[in-house]
Image (cartoon, rainbow, N blue to C red; front, side, top):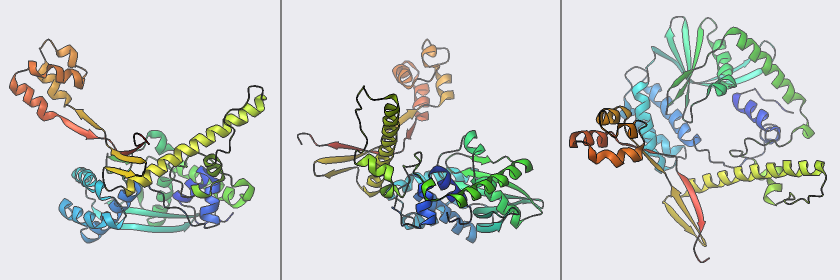
Length: 370
């Protein structure tokens, strides 16, 4: 199988689905445009940050100028205008905690190197910062969900980028952080032994891709939702066409029943991923909250969750007979007992109320009588 320079992207594709790797990197087959909930806003943020820090490399961060650039980059990156307001709010909160580096050394730095063991690697570093005369930091911006400890342990991108940075700055100590703009910064911990183990692992991946032939490149479930080759996947095609026997007879052998169960599981997983992909496509195309299409109606739904400030509620109800009811800050109980409080305490709680909106989703139904 053809091998390009190993990158975080193509390694992840190979590990998740060899068949997709074959189509994407070996056969170079054109792919579908698949909506990813975080990709367009992520692209807009990255291009905005590159433009801003190229023009204004010194502190402080001017949030108004940053948002002006974001307003230009948002439509350029194919982002829905409905997400712009939310993104602005996220960026404002991120800017409050962003610590401007002593010096910006590089932005969107492409690094191509051949490791001593012969493995060619490729990385794109969002921003390289100088911490002090002995230390640099690679910062990678993320607009999606924050990583768990297991995600960090299994991460491919961070050690790959560290290898690239060490090639550029061999005499410097290299730090690496993921900057989750919706949440916080997370430093990637590593030591020299981990890096040596990772380099050996890369060698194994490189050899596995080189030795993979056509028969080894089989579809593998697990990342179908955002796969841009689902229209060419035999597993997905078979699931769409109902190619699996749904109701095997009880007289079937145990071997056959196990095979049926495996095939059904694959079909359900594939169709669930296809359903999510189609909903993403529909949401990207919907400019209005409700859209009618023949016998069907699509409605954009966004759930709302109301919360009160914990400290304000506890202080207001302390010493009252309802204190035990609301100690868990049950929203229903708090509302039920609000009128029992003096007006000033009631106002404090109402002022502390915050509404959090979940990510929107689309609900599709058939019109009544059709």
